Image (cartoon, rainbow, N blue to C red; front, top):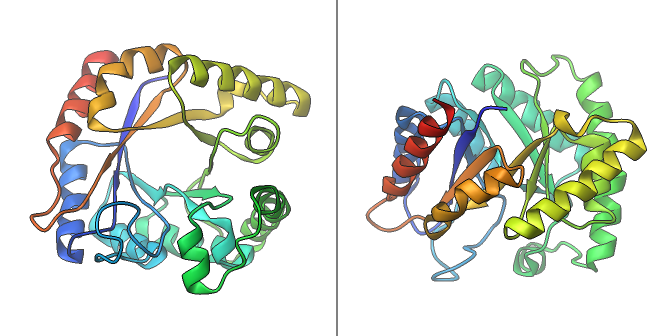
Length: 258
């Protein structure tokens, strides 16, 4: 499987115009995917700094890009009715011409829950909710008129060996995992076991992983461990986004795929 690279343009500590310019510049550099995230407050830096909502940002991203797949890394299952989440992604898929990835996870950032009135509960409760809602999302996608334009792969973020990886095997076309090389390899093996249990070929699931600038040195090892899609996170700043590490990652991809 050819190596793909993406970027998560983190929607914080910047202006919307600078974020929009970063999406367009990333596509010009040749990335395969562009992501945002689904939070209501910054995850680091000034906790009350500027921050933008996920789905409305994705709709704008769909309008100003034309080639790269787009999505959230990842939407929080707790924040929206699953049928609404499916319908919103399908509408954005039509705006984009069929380039949307439906990324989803169980949720973890407690401040989002507390400030916006969602019940945080426990991690097992949030995972049970995700297991309940994924079939609802898939059913709604099958019922929508119009249907999605593109294949709209489901990407599940998380590495929990018992529940999350089982859900990946059951529902996802993409898996966003975490950990060092040895941990990633071990989780990939567990995912393959879950796939065997549900009758899926594990090669049907694209393996993605987030990287930061300092982790680019480990890209070769992660690729050997099974990662085929590397997604670089870049944070906002008053002066915009620094895309230099993204250029390095794109150049590495092109060398590896040559």
